[in-house]
Length: 90
Picture 1 (cartoon, one colour):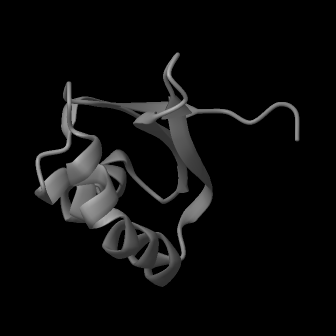
Picture 2: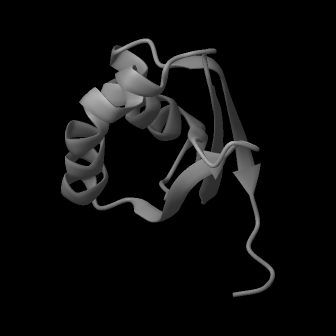
């Protein structure tokens, strides 16, 4: 099953994002369950959140992935929504 993680950064948290980005990218690579991922961009052209598509067996696995993400551990996000997602195009 696929799950979308829709994560919004806390205000003024760009430095937290930048400092934890290498570990976050390593988490994506090492877990092998991320099909697509990328940052949201604000009006100023700065990263301000993340969209991550996971292919995992259960919602609990998606929640565990999010809990282990270095961005989440660093307290970057003001909110994280985990929603089952069905790919129709692409």
